[in-house]
Image (cartoon, rainbow, N blue to C red; front, side, top):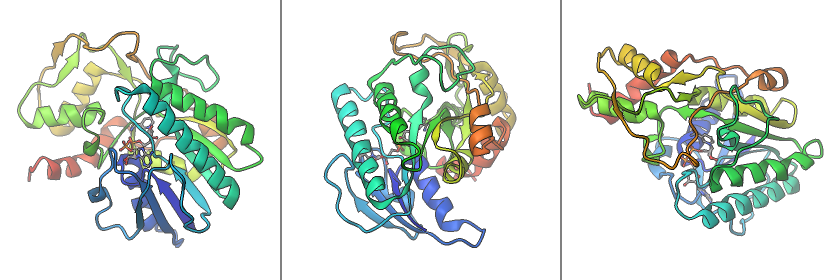
Length: 306
Ligand SMILES: NC(=O)c1ccc[n+]([C@@H]2O[C@H](COP(=O)([O-])OP(=O)(O)OC[C@H]3O[C@@H](n4cnc5c(N)ncnc54)[C@H](O)[C@@H]3O)[C@@H](O)[C@H]2O)c1
């Protein structure tokens, strides 16, 4: 198949590109990447035999032929980006252009939404529960879901509301990279892992390989917008314990005051995963410990550990 991965030089996008180029089921894919390199990096695609175009998807798109599958990952991904109107404009107009491209080519489209749009609503979070929009980032993704929904059925479109994704090649994101990355870095530097007081906040951590698998399953599943999480909530104290287990360390957390405005900070995330299980046949395979253990060799390389 000929695939377009927007945001393919970013964290999740580059893992998708890698998977598409190395699937072992006999299928062969040609992969084209569009990325404006805002938070993505060419080095994330090192060694991957794909076609790269430095393109901002919110601007007029060139004609690079027909795509069978489009995986739309490109977005301003930092909820604290600082320029709300830019986040809204780039994410929404970019999606509009990708929707049009998919319509024109009759491509199957899978796009990235977010669990951020549930805000501080009840957990576990269900797809149809009221949304609590805390940031322009969340607003842009909610708008994308609303744009996509009426087209479902006329076109093959699936939106994936990722929860807290972690794994190789996330470090280029800087501060918005996962807690697993940041706490691991502190721990291997011999520092105590720093978490917000009193470590009771909850996250649904999903490993990037599961996230990639959800994208592939979405090509065959029923159109809709689905949670992509494990369904398991892990609080920050439990996360530190898991990191200590996996890194074979014994470092106590160091607590500090949560520095963000509580009105824009999402305290808890935990997916209700049953809709994705029913309609996409998606169920996360990696437990928290399995994901961290699979990720450790890549972190060791990055932290220059043997
Ligand atoms: N990582 C997570 O935990 C998480 C959670 C929920 C949703 N998401 C969504 O998943 C997708 C991928 O996120 P990620 O974690 O890999 O972040 P990322 O920042 O690494 O990837 C986003 C990529 O999009 C590119 N980009 C940004 N704006 C663009 C534009 N206008 N045109 C072309 N390229 C553009 C960036 O340069 C970057 O390579 C995003 O849509 C994000 O909102 C991620």
